[in-house]
Length: 365
Image (cartoon, rainbow, N blue to C red):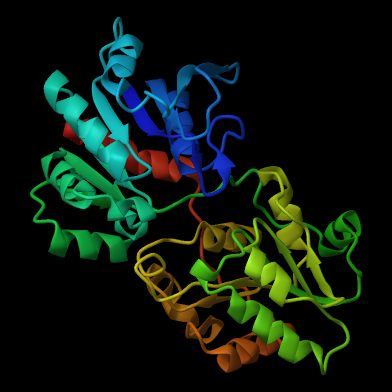
C-alpha cells in the first residue's frame, strides 16, 4: 500500500520527526518495515521552515514538515498536491487534532482517496474545540471518513453514541518500544540518576499537569514523607509552574524533561510508579501510554481508576485509586511498598498496533 500520513509535528511535548516519537511515528514506521510505501506531511505549529526527513533504517518512509503559519493551513491542499504529484496514495491515515481531520477529509474527498481518521485523544477536550464551527466540521469529517481508529474503548463508546457514524471504528491503543521498555536493574538505575540506593522511591514520568490530577501524587507524598524519612518522590517531564512553586521538599527530585530513551531508566529506579488522571472529558477517554510502558518494564505501580484503565486492570482492582481520593492513593502506595505486586499483563508493542492498522487501511480501500 501507498499510505499518506497527515498530522501535526509537535504533540504531547515531543517532536514527532526530530525525536521519532510516539504513535504517529512508530506505527507508520512499523508499516514501512513491512514493505508499505509511507509518506507523511507534518504541520509544524512552530516556525521551522520546510524540512524533509528520511532515515537509513526506514527506506520505505519519507516525511515533509511545513509550517502552519503564516500560510501553511491555507496552502495545505497545494502542499499535499505537490507531495503526491507523482505518487498517488492508496489510503490516508490522518491524526492529531480537529483541524487535521477537517483538512484531511476535504482533500481526500476531492481527490477521491479513502480516508481513515485517528483519534488518539478526545479532541473535543482540546482548546481548539472552542473555535466557532470547528467541532461541527470535525464531527462531519468523522462521519464522512471510510473508517476511524480511536485510542480507547471509552472513546469508542462516546463517539459511537454521539457522532451518528456509519463507518467502522477500531480501538487502536498505544503500544511501546519493547526493545527499550523492558526490566532493568533498579540499583544501577538509581546510581545513574543520582538517587539514594536504599531509599523508597515513588514517582512518575510524563506531563506534571493539573489537567491530569497530578496534585494527588504530591499531596500523598507530602503526607507520607512526614512519617517516612526514607521516602523520595521523583518525577520527570514538563511541570506546571503553579505545581513547581507549590510543592517543595528536600526529597522531591525533579529530573526535568528527558529524552525518550532515558525514560526507562527513570521508571526502573522506582519502587512504585504512579499514574494519575482526572475523571474529565480528557482523562475519561484517553489511554495512558505510561501504563503500557510500566507493564512492559514489570514495575509495581498504582493507577487512577479512569476510563479504559479500569477494564485493563480488572483482575487487579486493588492497584487502582479513585481520582481525587488522596487517602486511598496513600493506602495503595503503602501496600505496594510493603508487598509489591506486578500485574501479569502483556503490553502491546508498536508492531501489534501496526497489525491492527494494516487491516483497517486495507478494508478502507
